[in-house]
Image (cartoon, rainbow, N blue to C red):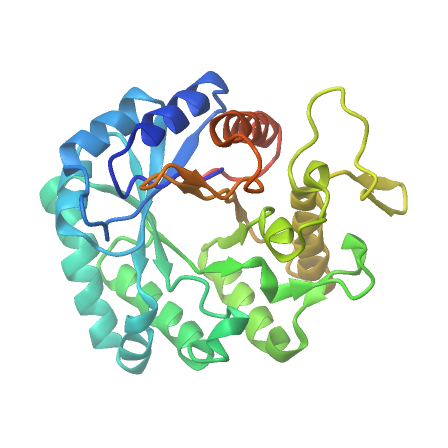
Length: 316
């Protein structure tokens, strides 16, 4: 599902939540960023989430105030283990056990936090990292899984690794030709195989707006979902009998093709369609600068939630 950030108080927060409520899907999830100059109190944030229909949240790190506020809230949590801890956790299973004890077991048992996933790293294979976290990621995942098993939490809490969509590609532009990046094909297949065998899930972050950021002439009707009844974008991609009318669908099916190519099509995928809203300044990344921010953001967000409600993608 699309993630909204709740890392700073601003009217745009309420606007975004109200828009999401107007287009209720089966479940709505939010990213809760905690590194802000003026963060909302945890209890206020949780109440706003609940009041506006959000029942799932991702924390990028184990923030004590946020976790305590989420206790007995009915909100399911994906808890992040930051990239900077990957090497430590990868080297020593005892470090993974300590992290799980302090940040998962403690909040589950003592505060009633409904932690469902541990996100090991955040987009660790991103090209811009130049391989910095590649060697540590899979060993860290294995050690965290072992720690969850030892803590008796493996049935409740599953592991995942949120990945950027740049881990796969299609050289000819057709989704059916999708495959993993050549430099990480072996790593990706090993990681997904482990997640599949251990009951974990694969999390993919797809950013349709980045196409427009990279190319001012990129067609907006292809970067976002077409409005109901609108003609297909001229940038639509024909792949066999399938016409792809938006970036998200084409991108997601490229991933599916890559997984199936390596016999990994049975993995559960948590697909997140991420449209960043800059709530701290009122600025938005949904459109070009000349567009009306609130109106365009409303239209884009509404269409995203309405369309994702129809997709067979796990919402977390």
